[in-house]
Length: 178
Image 1: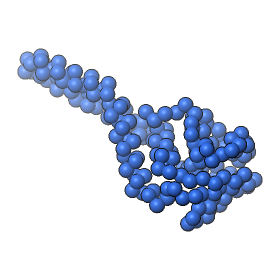
Image 2: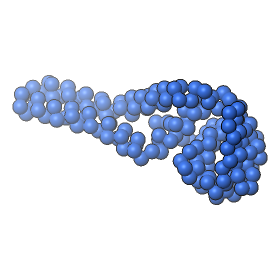
Image 3: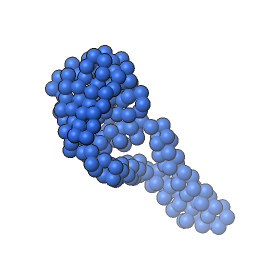
């Protein structure tokens, strides 16, 4: 099976956001950021209430902590997305909108674009991740091959080939960046 396609900025962004959403470090960092600020507000509120006798300032700080905790997921979602957009614009500006060709054989995946060729052993494929508009082929080296769904005419045949490579199929069709 041979696929020919071009990757655009949004294809690269989906890959980055998906990988970030699955990263234990990023999940932990976002969780800690969400919790630390409200705790700081709570400590300050207790200080104002207990030591200064200023209930208004204390209640206001508690309210700010609740607002932060409630709205941080939206803020974080936008901040991380902006970070990855800037990263892609800076590091991949010469890689987008170039025609790529990938050929799947029994033992290898051959990739070719305007500047290079690559040959990957089929036993290096770890996962096939199906997203709404993309397939991500994760290799054991933690690299991803991004394939837009629109480039694949026969998705079942495509999945079968990768499962024959012993790839673990991961259904994330309903995944959204959060």
